[in-house]
Length: 389
Ligand code: SER
Image (cartoon, rainbow, N blue to C red; front, side, top):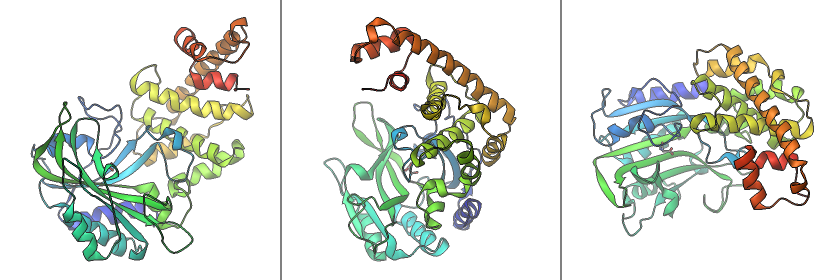
């Protein structure tokens, strides 16, 4: 199945079970939301998880683009992307967690044809505030799926306060051998789907109170699922990266982790620009700036003449189309080129400052602070100009 077929199979499966599809999928969360970018499908739903009736009813399904920068240092491995699409379902005070898990199991095994013997799940084992999630445990035992109980790994929250609850995560075995060990002990178990029993709200003082209704919130990463269903070794083998894998390697020769990082960050930058963000020194604009500068730092490491002017318009257009963004690819390229020019000016200044007498020896923490606060030179960039000896 390609990603479009997966999306169709997923949404139809849930529509047949009374879910209504929500449209709209910007990376910019609604006003008042504490996060800079949408990191999961639940952002736009917070008021409804807290009890406000949703105009489409109690059962919802959607495809939400998300951006996660918490895992930035892991991009380049097999499973992490900064921008990805999340398939999501919700029960807003409707059916309970075991029903959600049962449908999820049915879709994975019958709808997507996954061998049930390759699944393992984790379930919340209870802590001093909330008891073990026996409903999920019973369901999985009934279905014969092995369960690992954890505490922190099976508690989902969107931040220090707000809706939260125990979750049950479904993992797929990706090893060459028959499945062994458990998800927390062997990373060949890759998480595919998280079902959160969103029953609580955490208050400012850290206490938990029950939400007015018991919700279920599930999220399944599209690119990860597609590559796993194809038996591929990484998310970068997903079909949405086909043109990237074709066009980027002839342009820039990079080792595998660097190639992945460059493709991921450029693709994310295009989507972020497509949602209306422009580079700046604060907030969302700063996230975009970091993404572009990380790409430039990697590209320039081996060859100072590499630049974003070589980036194919086809890649920009392909990405904008994929995310249904109505922006001229030339506008996106211009934003990237302007940012590259600013980065080059910064590099020039950095070289000049670092050639000063004060910086001849190894750099101290004070030097890094001074370079950042007085000259606007971030640590990454200083380290690029002056790798530690
Ligand atoms: N909100 C949960 C997650 O992001 C499930 O959608 O994993």
